[in-house]
Length: 463
Image (cartoon, rainbow, N blue to C red; front, side, top):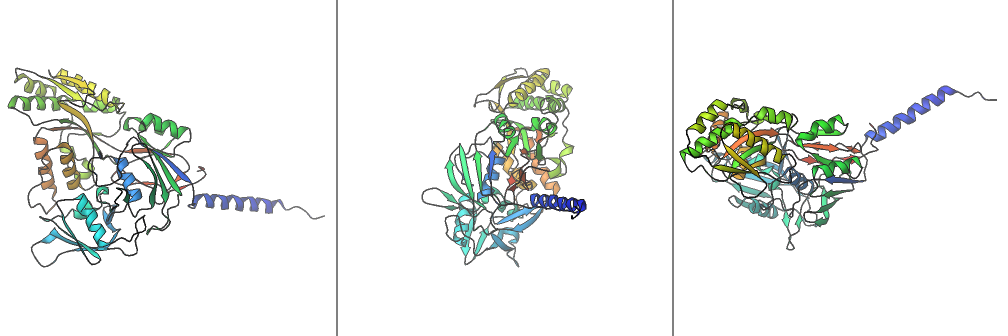
């Protein structure tokens, strides 16, 4: 009779367990990822300016389309452009750029990527640019030196698109469109011949126009793998054990006036309003500690000087400014009725204003004297973020003519000029947060608040 060696069984069990663990930590091909988001775009064209800017739109764009370059940890990396150079030996400096286009890349419809198609795509997104094709290169000429051009080309709105006659956009990204129901649903499939390699996921199904509450319910019931989390809900979601990921503070929450101040009295009243807001208590109570109180357009991590703008209320100064005005109008302050915390924020700001002797009336109407707005900052590059925020707010950008140094002093002067218009009152800088199921592996957040799924895969959900 042969004796049973229990030690061999132990060793074998350990080896089987180790192999299973290693298999789980290795990326696996296959599976359908389910995503939900609040945004409900009706167009997938990155250059369509009729679509409101959102972090969700950025994420969708970069799943389907590629840019000439990408920025990874403040380093410019080649993408559809393999190399680039500026014109040397004259006074033009950063006005003239040449980009060599990557060969062997195909759009999702099977046509080859060409310099002509790239140039046409960039012209559509930037009508003021002079863009031309030169053999296998694209040449971009600006009317002034533009040291931020590489960062601009990395923006999702500058993704390269082949616009087909039926208005269907075709890209070169890791996923292509299978089913598109504008404002409702987007189904994507893995691009087998993607120049970057086939993604691990077989498909992505995205439900659009879903509230934060509906998204979290879908995650908890296993119907979604990746959802958005409202800033004020991040602490609760984390305490409940969900896998949470948050960006740096990349969204500006602000009060935006519909027009310029019409008189000196109105300027005094706007100053009084800015001085009356109790950002600290609002952040603690309504935002549950999320983000940072702000009196600057750019967050401190981006500019380095955001802390110099005082965020504490100053009721004596607010009341003094108010006392210099005899007729006090009733201002309507608009908010997004679909945002569950927006009404509470507007009401709290109205109470603060009342303490200073002002009169604000919150309304969900689209027409108001000023609005509570969320402005997604376009880029980690401060100059681009500032210019984009100015465009969204309808304020002169304040960028000095001939700016080519990119100095902090110039940036501070430009932002101060924008704030001096009294069109905008910054309140908070907020992060973008997402919750993911335990099965979703190796997804990541970009610095601009969007997510990337090119390397994501679905596992068993075990740690």
